[in-house]
Image 1 (cartoon, rainbow, N blue to C red):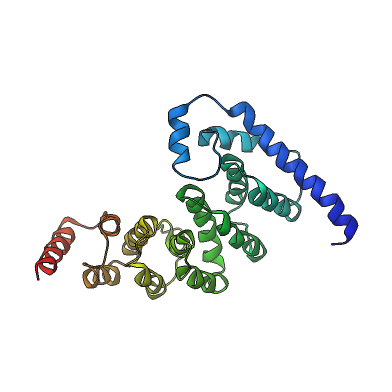
Image 2: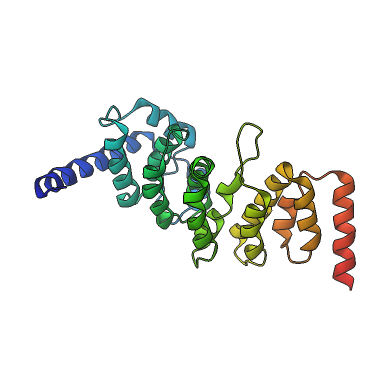
Length: 256
């Protein structure tokens, strides 16, 4: 992009960001209890606007909503990275969610950088859902990044190295082989971060839905290593006999 292009682009981006932030103000209502709840999810300033209101406002569109996708991408990327309000950052996620089956590898190159702004489960999990559709289409391109995130100091990267692998098990979608999934779960079994622990359990739960035998075997082999929250999530959908078997073995191993 030339100098004149950059000079034009920055004011346009700033205008788009201001438009987003101004669109939020009429939605703000005095709801201290809900605002406190929202503030538990993020370190960013928070208005306490409920998600249905945000989604309805997003559907109404903005001055740039009719632009082609390639022209909207840098705008949403700018809003995501420059806005300091939790709710304003939700709109870029809504945009890429709205085209989750159309996003391609050029979108991934932008979206994978968004993990740096994640500071809580709400935006992190929404981003993981977007990643999951990209991973379904481009597993070979995305998996190396997940391997890197799996070893990262940032717990939200570690969490997002797992959640996109399955997210929610469904017969309508395709998934990686069980060995690929468990290869990223295993290094995080002893992770101390509570949100990573939940991601371990979540992923094992969904993995068991798709691959019951190898996942159940994995659970038996790592019973004492799983944290309480990982174990709770991982065993949610097991049959009663399976739960009893694991509980018995877990108690036996604890005593020995």
